[in-house]
Every structure is written in C-alpha cells, then in structure tokens.
Amino acid sequence: MGIITPRLLAIANMIKDEKCVADIGTDHGYIPIYLAKKHTVKKIYCTDVAEEPLNKARNNINSFGVQKDIEIVKSDGISWIKEYRVKVDTCIIAGMGSKTILQILKEDCELIDCYVICCNTNNTPIRQWAKEHKYFIESEVIVKDNDIIYEVIKINKHAGKKIKNLKDLYFGPILRKTKNNKIYFEKWLLEEQRQNKLLSKIPVKTKKYKDTLKYNKKIKKMINKVIKDEFKS
Ligand SMILES: C[S@@+](CC[C@H](N)C(=O)[O-])C[C@H]1O[C@@H](n2cnc3c(N)ncnc32)[C@H](O)[C@@H]1O
Image 1 (tube, rainbow, N blue to C red):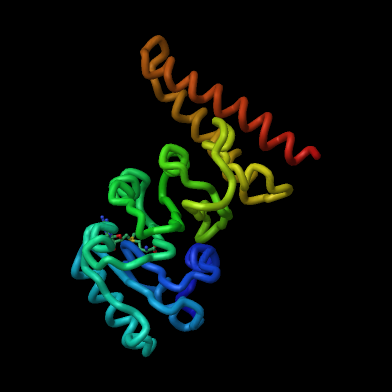
Image 2: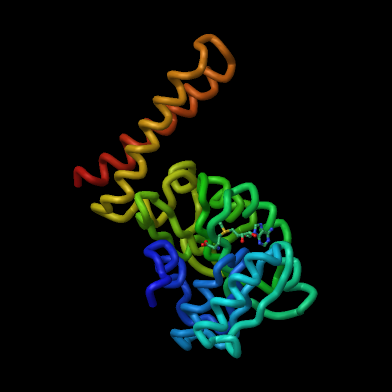
C-alpha cells in the first residue's frame, strides 16, 4: 500500500491481536485503512476533532473500498469512548505534540487497555504520564521518516516494563536496552547538539541559563552513560 510511510508502518505494526482499535486524530485515515486492508482488527474507529480531516479520511476510506470496516467519529480526543460505551483495546494517538496528547489522555478510562503513541515532540512527558497512571511500556521502536526521527511507544495497563527511574523516563526502558540501534544513537547525539546550541543562546548568569545548564548536564551524563556505554559493548 503506497500510502504507508515508515512512521505509519511502525505505528500500525504495534497493533497485534486487538479486536477493536481507535485512531485518534486520524487526518488522512491511512492507519485505519491499512489496518482494515490487513483484516486483523474486527472493529476500527477513525476519529478527528475537525470536519476537514474527517472528509479527507472519508474520501480515502471510500477510494480504498474499506468503508464497511471503519466507523468515523467526530470527537475531541477519547471522550466519545465513554459515551459509546465501547471497549477499545488500543487507541492510537500520533502526529501531535505532547501537550495535545496529554490533554487527550486526561479522558483515559477503564474502557481502554493500551495506547500507541507517536509524539511529534518530547516523549518524556508521555512516559511520565504512563508512570503516574501505573501503565507499563509494552514496546518501543524508533524510526526515521523523511529525515525526522520518531519514537513509537505502546503503553499497556496490564503488562510490560515499569518506568523505574530517570533513564527510563528520558531514554525509554525498552529502547535504552536495545543494542546497536543506529537511529537511536543518532537521535541522542542530535539532542546533545540541540542542547548545546540552546545553551549558547541564553545569556549567562540568568536563571534560565542555570536551569538549562543543569538539564543539559543531566542529559549529557545520561547520553554518555547509557548510550555510549551501550554502543561500546
Ligand atoms: C498532524 S495530524 C496527524 C495525523 C495522523 N494521526 C498521523 O500521525 O499522520 C493531527 C490531527 O489530529 C487532529 N487533532 C488535534 N487535536 C485533536 C483532538 N483533541 N482530538 C482529536 N483529533 C485531534 C487534527 O485535527 C489533525 O487532523
């Protein structure tokens, strides 16, 4: 299927033996279409807060002939799940920043078991949310798409790795244990460079400089300890 990019494929591949999946903020609808074409998920919801993306998704769904397999829902986030009283095995939330994703996760409820999250910004707040809400990390992958590096995280209410410490929060409890992952290494080297650049723009002797330097040192220490050590072994 030509519409599926490496990022979308990494997200779709996180769906294993789910019966019901919802794609929150679907836009083009390509993930639900891909899942419908694979015939592995019984019920697929395709949702977005805005009418325009939903029209786009509707057109794509019709042109791929999978309209019978996908239900379109116009809603803000996941609040519709309680109204519909449906059990959703996994909600996919992708292509948004961590603030929007955290806003959506405020409506988390017992009808949802897992989330597959691919955040456009920092993943630490997402893992922090998982830790605070006693979710586990079921799987984590890193993917490069159009020269942008994305982490895809599946969090599960019942099983997976616990987020135990700061290293897990920043680097991912599963990702940080994978050996010789070139994209992962590249991501953190780029982050180190980004932090250095950021610091050079802040006037010295300000509180912001002090705070950024503290964070910078923490990141560097972890990069050296976790990432470089992993690649030495
Ligand atoms: C950049 S697109 C991402 C599309 C697709 N999920 C992907 O990863 O390629 C973001 C979509 O999320 C939708 N969106 C933003 N906030 C939302 C919310 N609170 N609830 C549902 N959809 C939302 C937008 O309307 C837009 O269509």
